[in-house]
Length: 490
Ligand code: PFF
Image: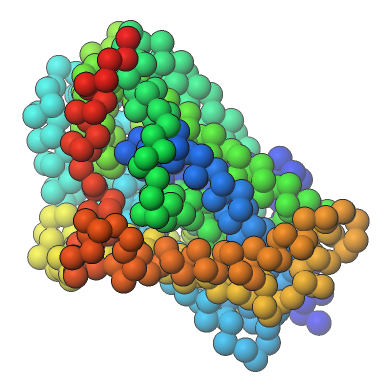
């Protein structure tokens, strides 16, 4: 009977806008802004985008809907959700893995989020002005390998995350994502307009969109699938947790569609805000940290009003990251409150402290703890690798198997149709996807991520799985660049 009182007391989002803002907030994050544009540009531009959109529609949205179904049907955190929907069966292990993954993701993701605060500070205090590429590289290295500042920024970012989550779903997460998400869009629009109107911007637009279908092979398709998973926050129970706060009358299929659309649009617009500017000023479009914390600060300086744009860019990154970190912390807090009986305040405090311990160790893996390595990866890289390439695919795989083969069509239809209120003509297609298409596709990404299944001949000889992933993620742009520069784009 605890279930009934739970349903009455349970905090929830107030309506459609809140559902979209919070969940799109989770999906839109660092993955959209620094990873997507680069991966798209490198893997066939417009052609990659085409493949990516098909994957989002055919696999991403159905998997997202499956998480929503589990969460809203059970009204629980991921662990409790599987316990409720499949009592006395081992499915709860998937939920438990999600809670563990949440700790791990928060540790490294919040570390990077902390770097964005350092760069907000450096932009605002004018310290980036007048520095050349080498000086900016040194500056980033010195910051990263220092012990005090990265730890401090990590703690500050984690405290913001904790404070929002502590206030609850409606008074915390909903209240903040309601204004942070529109703010993110406004900043992104300003940066995008600035970038595409620069003289010479067309090279960047070409890099991002030029459809080169000859680049599309199985490696690129699998890469698109992996990117879609991380970007949509699928596979670790974040969306089960948020789904548990959706109003009972929410049309979850339309919410999933809208969130996927927002996530994809932000990724594309981020590309339009970054690459035209990079090419206009003759920079080279590297990936990840190098692009965001070294190349871009260099480019902002060459622009009129660069200080403002630099500041806006790092605020954009921080906002995108914050709406994602709160969704991950909420997974742990929901677990602590519902399974360990803690109050929200105590649960958030405990979770924040525990994550901070792991987070500080992670931050220090770039300096004093750098000697701790496994498979040639430091703690930061190990956490990133084991969550994104191992735990998310395993979680996603079992989530669709659960819906397709265990929870079944009848109960899933009841949940997606809001007990018969909504038409769900897509059900046969949806069930086909969650039973067959999605599990097979996810299994392939998983094996590929670990290096067991590698369609690219070039990498077939590699045996060290971590090396394979590195080379997949950091495939040198040199191969693409001469091609772009040779092409006359006038
Ligand atoms: N979707 C986020 C991004 O693209 O940056 C990352 C993320 C958030 C992954 C939440 C997983 C998660 F549960």
